[in-house]
Image 1: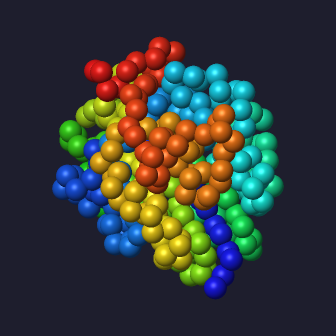
Image 2: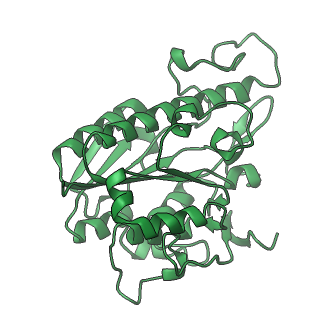
Length: 314
């Protein structure tokens, strides 16, 4: 059997839960390819802890929380954790959407790759995963960021939209364009998973969107209203057959928790738990790892314009 281990943290951009057909509610098929992937678990009650990239991403990849946000400047990120555990580490950056900071991004990174498009991001991941036997890759897509134009012509499925039908007046212009970006992201992530499947590896992918999006007939935005659509975002885990066979107990816990109340606080600990990385006791938080039998929901907090707001008390 192969000793190859490949782990990928994929951070989405501006994708909201409400428009993801994997939620079982949205009538449009925006995620047809991921829906066909075996071993994919989609979580229904995950909330971002911030509604801008610069607040939310540090809370995904470090132990920082809305309540204890200073940790994102004081501690190392998940990248360094993998580096210290013998993994080759890589970060794939998309120009404008990279959040460069020595605090949580560059420390412990063996490879930094720059990509001009989301397709190029995925190509870098596929190349790196073929070459290295023990690899952790992190990246952020441009995804569904406004103006919702991040899809090639063959994904121009939902019309009319503001990108290709500018002279048309319709309340659904922006929603149509937005849904096309999700359809395209579905295609890219599914292609990446297909490529990992060919490797005979113990592999897992965690996908989480940094924040969601408020969309009206005339525009789309985030970071101002900070309502449900800006915080309730998709989170899913995919694992290879080899991973599943070796970690049946963890998979069973994850399956039991697909409707549990979770947020960014849970991501760091779940990734460590699922990859058998043991944190020192003073950093461990076993009840926040959704792949653990110790998991228990905790009160979720949001960072809204510098204020800490209790999500579950609202």
